[in-house]
Amino acid sequence: MSIAQTLRRRWKAFGKAEDGTATIEFAIVFPFFVFTFLSAVEMGMITYRHSMLERSLDIVVRNIRLNTGAAPQHDQIKQQICDTAGVIPDCTNQLRLEMLEVDLRTNLVIPDEVDCVDHSESARPVRNFVNGQENEMMILRVCAKFDPIFPTSGLGHYLEKDGAGQAALVSTAAFVQEPD
Image (cartoon, rainbow, N blue to C red; front, side, top):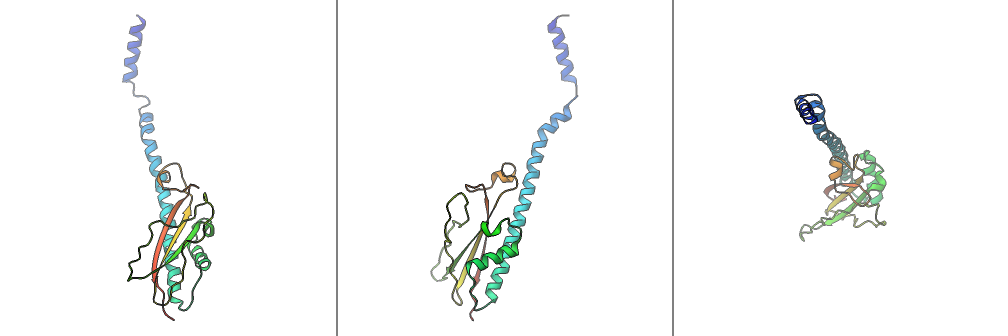
């Protein structure tokens, strides 16, 4: 028997063998499941942090509305939000507030660009934070930065990140400053 016939016979036997078919299927399907699992974990944490940020902002805004005559300052509001949220890592350094006065007669357009902390840039002062007068509509916008759990895979890879590799959670609330 020649070498060519031997190779042909072994090649046919190799083609008919079913050994390793589960391994091939596993190698094709496993990365999809890992991607889905990592994305689910990342999405769960983002949703949890965002809902806690929203809840915290709602509680703080409610306190501001009901405490007539009080004009809480930037640092007080920031600390209250951080104390209430609880799940934002390094909250006092990662959170940035912006408060805008809204005059409903002038159709003020709120800027699309959210003012967030970016640790890859030099420090910037608070963009806009003004306590309102009685019966004045106010917009309070909060931006909290966080590090994705899996920054290079799953959903964490596709999040919009700043120069320091952090993604942002943004929450906005509107309220009317109650009269004394």
